[in-house]
Image (cartoon, rainbow, N blue to C red; front, side, top):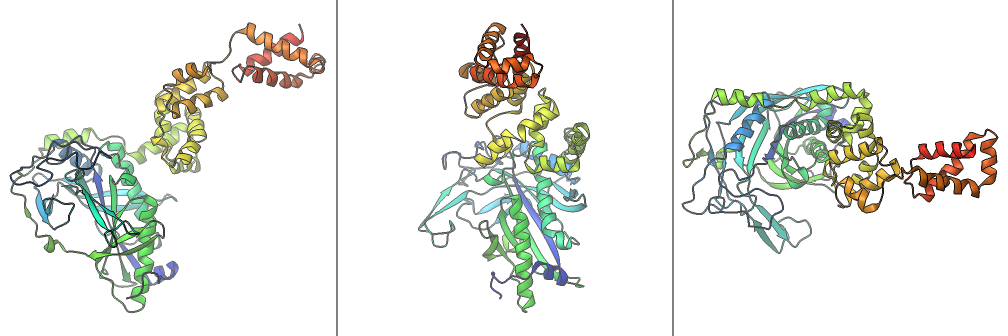
Length: 501
């Protein structure tokens, strides 16, 4: 087999092969408790503190289905235009992993709760690609292994491994596409756009925080190549647990160029799982990929089937929010944004926080100005998303209101935002603690203006001779004297009044 480092030029790949994609996205639901027990679900808790006999797979412990997770699964299925099963059940998927205490995963096999759906995905140039959905089924997450020692963080070369079962039993929905064909050179872009659209949809539904960096949204990217003109799919590889949108695109592109090089030299693609290396953008072999027969699926005897009534499904359909892409088009119209302006806001993740700031009382222009300037820079410095900054849209709207009613100048407002970001409290508390309120007492301003005029008799003469622009020097002096806490417009008025007194 050709070494992984030997790649075919991408244009040559497209000239000789047709890519086929299959994307499996695992979504951790944001329920309060696990899928089959009452243990809490919270990211970052102390290892092995959110466990019980059921999620540890101890003898005699029996599972109970989480109703909220079932509800979320149905809402996801409806949003993906799926049919919702009138009757479905869980199955045992048998395999051994140290971080799976039962030695089987409770999942769904041939009877998923949602199936035969689709999602329209818009690429950057406006091209729409329909991705067909095979199924969306319920299952539970496994625990987590931490391999200590070695250079890669993987089990190979590690000195020992630690197991944390907090994640074992967390509710998962796995969304599986049908084979995605006909995308040609745009296959990597389509993969990224699909996962992006799915993430936005799930966030809008409120069923998951979809944090790829924390593993609550993970993508397994299946890639195979067919020679031009062939009718039979090639052998696929599955790059596991890709955890960023950019990496989904890079992983698909890399696998296309790697597989093409192997096939070009007469080699065969091994059906296997692969790992994606963020630093190099390459994939490496994992294990031989099992088939469904290897998992020895059989119906879960400890759980009764699920039969959602059509009335319940109809009620849940009524709870679906405005779809993200529909909302974006509406916002674009209401805010009078060009396609480029909207794309820029999407690229920095600002649409939702700006919309929430507008809902809290700010104008679209003011909200945009704050989120795409000072706050975007702060998010970039901290290496976080805008929505993860320690300031809320409501707080930003409050600062904007203070500027509008003259309580703050723009300069003072920036200091208030800095204080909120630093954890000093609500905007009003920061104003009070830092003494940032605008000086609105005319007597104090008049004294500062008179002093500045007295110190600059030449400027006073220019103003009196009609050179009004010379007043800018006096305004600047007063602003410095008041530490930026004066209303510049009012200072300008007073400078002209006192110059001609």
